[in-house]
Length: 328
Image (tube, rainbow, N blue to C red):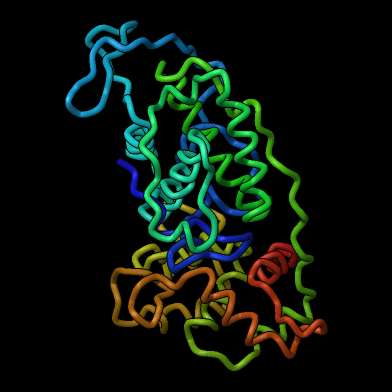
């Protein structure tokens, strides 16, 4: 059964509630297109035209599932929403961090199916999600309940976070419908909200100034990889030491074919990885993976004097500057 959100989903756009939230690559990055379907990195979502057949319960088993009456001896449909979430995530091709983020997002929607709504603020810490039957998503009022919950959620955490949570639910519902576990699509009643555009890329002069700042080796290597590859912050922070193909200046195995680097990172990365053969490339002081929040805080503090507004630059603007630079 899915756990309650003792580890919270981000409280607001760009604000993670703890380490590890923003290490999830690809699927939950801000600005992603609307993609219902299972979160399989690099794979297309399932067809929206997948056949869906009605499912009726025969008998409840001891593990909380019901056998589908239209496929005797075939797959069984879960009774509980949390069990359906477990099945969906078990089939998804995601890393541990991404799977954890999806679980938190999908757990959030359990509250939308019962009265009371999602707890907010301090009340949500340690709150246990309600146990609800999956068939509530097929109830006539399900779409309206989700629409109301989405509206409230977008006010609480901002449109980007709410849209990401909605996208996670849409993918799960599409997967469940394709297996006949649901007959309707309650998410069709909810549309994602428009989000503000990202800040402009750093100018070439600003980027050059950033890359000449005095900073610890970890930060220098991170900033150079972001700028020289133009990849997303999340993808870079998710790298492990054994992902690196240092002689070829790229990531191994075609995981991120666009993630390659140039002279600056090529000098720094061997020093950063020295003596390590596995584990997070960009590690925290405790040895875990450097979180998005901490990386962003360090970068903003280091670049505050370079920013005319005095707030400090964002890592996304540095990566955007790398994508905008002319190719050699």
